[in-house]
Amino acid sequence: MTETDFERLMQTIADGWNEGNARKAADCFSEDAIYVEPPEKQLYRGRDELYEFFGGDNGTDIPMKMTCHHLAFNEQQQIGFGEYTFEMHGRYHGIVVVKIDAGLIKHWREYQYQTELGWEEFTGHNPYLTHFTLSQGHTSYPSG
Image 1 (cartoon, helix red, strand yellow):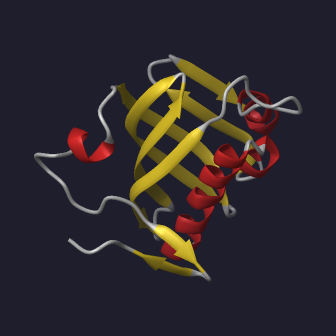
Image 2 (cartoon, helix red, strand yellow):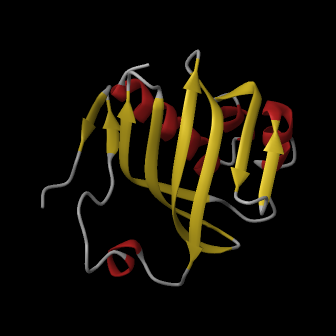
Image 3 (spheres, one colour):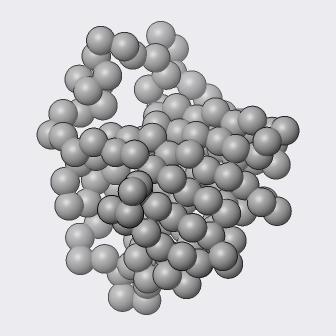
């Protein structure tokens, strides 16, 4: 997987959550994926469990909103990370570290902090890239 492929994969997950499409998000994970917020605050094993966690056939009780802020990917090791904001039952800013295998996420490990602050205020003393958007296969970053 390339860095561009990784960015697309992470955006597909965000799009799936933002659209309420559990299948779209879950299909980005391997059949035997492990999704964890250490130490075991959240722990899900396999695509089927993730599909249900992401809303399954019935969707979630309130909409999910995911924004990716900064992504990086090591093509040789097939390990990437991203900063994000997730909103559902509160607002969380966090970092996820993922391991890719055969083009899908095999391991997802997230660390997050619940806050009412927006991203810019949360990172105000140490800002850099704030988010990315994908358009026709090209990544664009805001200036500044």
